[in-house]
Length: 261
Image 1 (cartoon, rainbow, N blue to C red):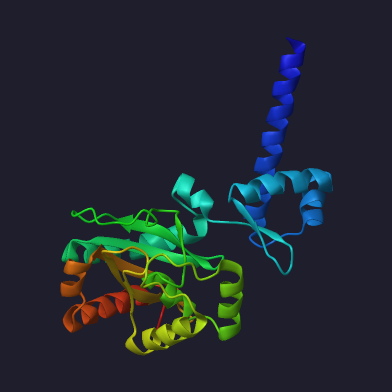
Image 2 (image 1 turned 180 degrees about the horizontal axis):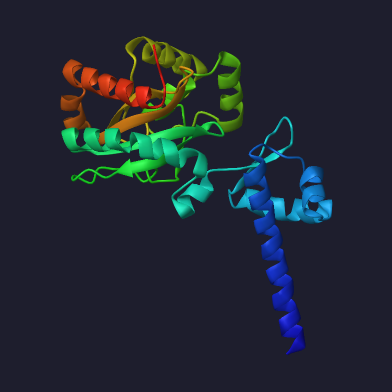
């Protein structure tokens, strides 16, 4: 019986150490080196490496390929449905996402960028239930073929896009998916000019999406709101009048975040 208790105690200690690592990364709010984590927590570096490997494989922690430092991902959001740094944005913008959903009666999402991918932090399911599997709170989606992703890519220069393509690739989901850098750069030029983006069956055949940018006080795009629905209904939604309504809504939402032209 004593052996069983000892084994349970050891397991509990391991869980506690893993949680300590998560809490430390959260408190520091910046990537950390293995040796710094070990020093802060009084652990052996080999122990930290082992626990970090597990957290990375499970998607809760990621490693910067250049600095080799570790940081938390937004997968925590998928479990708790809240991340402290973004819950405020979601709460501030929720009236706008709800308004858009009410007007168009389609699925509406709010997304931010995390680790060269898009993370959905708020989702409103339309009555017609047309929502792709990737569009769930906490889920991650690629940037090159999603309406929200194309908008957030406007924040970055060509070097960053090259890095994203190298690390993430340009995965082909349908025949409409952007799969070359030239296609992507041309698409971003178009998005920059028109002020909104479209996913035209690029992630899933039969599904179309239109997205508008939300800017912060610095003018940088910090999030994006998208509408997703069947291509037949979305063709009717994506009109000059509706696009202007969405742009105006995005502008008012941006002002709530401190944006001024």
